[in-house]
Image 1: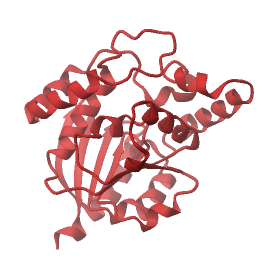
Image 2: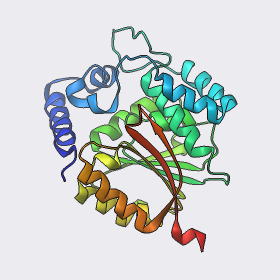
Image 3: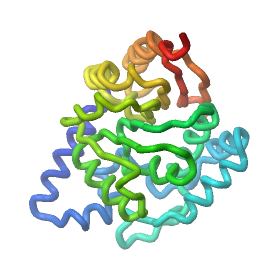
Image 4: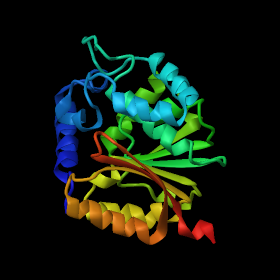
Length: 260
């Protein structure tokens, strides 16, 4: 029940080895190409997911257009000297839009604080900034992901007042924050059961909403089902949208304690 622990560990080890003799800024500017370090957070220079686009447009076409314009006007980063074919709007962009629409179309009240567990390069925050109303977006992640997130968000002019980053080894400050929403989009499902349980008991259980996107069969069916059983003890499913040819579930839950 180790999930993709080795992928995350190797990524961190490769990062530490790289920066011993290489320039950090150069790495960040080429992060999409440095697959041995940051490969697991990017889908490559691949065309948009047509199914994801159809799902998003069906739910709210106007909001989709707003997100699309936001993506198309973003700063293209991380490719170094390579000019991407789909830099303006790629596979990951289309899926992030779909998940954002599934999530925020089903939450009608204002959300003050959001916690994202496993924030990639900061794409969710960049996409939703100035579209969705929130007070602060908190991200907890591996230290070398925090470094990338801060660089990426700064390059995209996201003010420091809108977010805060936490290392996965030092997030005690989060225990005292009353965030309403936890986002775990293909992160929580990939953690080992030990790491998942730690986050769940310390952070997730107290939130009103949980957005949980996961592959139905990977890393393993046993691990996926064990996590779902834990979630279902405390949360009730609001909506589930299938994507990626019925291989992925995009679920929004509400905490049972908020329904009393």
